[in-house]
Image (cartoon, rainbow over all chains, first blue to last red):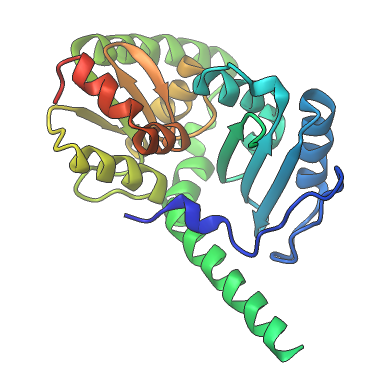
Length: 102
Length: 155
């Protein structure tokens, strides 16, 4: 069984709300930029990491106060609904949406 | 400098390997989505969805655990679907019903609309939508999936 946690490669952290882009992947930035803009506006994340491989595989890791006390399905639905247009354009989407880690 | 290049390339490799196992086989996707037979007209799509919805209603009603997946439990065609199957094996959950969405574009797209969920796999337990691979993974890790299956007397 593979582990999704292995994807946390080369730890790319947000520093004072600035996304340090992954150097991995040489892809069109439009989908990622669009995702990032929407996520920042809606959730005001304390942590945001968007990894993309090729044109169609995206992993989003997001932490936000908005997710406090929310069951996992509601957290995921909130992000999926927000990113509906982007997700339909890509082939593989993984999400980790949690309250801020202390 | 040299060291950094090695680190970057190895990180890239692991990400590539991981995502490769996530994605379904490109051939099956292209086959399904580009075939002229499936480019149905709007009216047709509407009636197709009603048919699909009836099928989904019945399938979910009749089975305590339903997994909509790419491929079959014996031969999953996607790393995400495979992950859920491996989780089932971990709990020795055998009494589940799987639907291979690659068999039908109507079902594949229909179940996304039905569940209001954009990706495959999708898990239902006792008629309730649980989520996709990420949610199954998290519930597996934190023990809540086992709790749910036990509560519903499925283990």
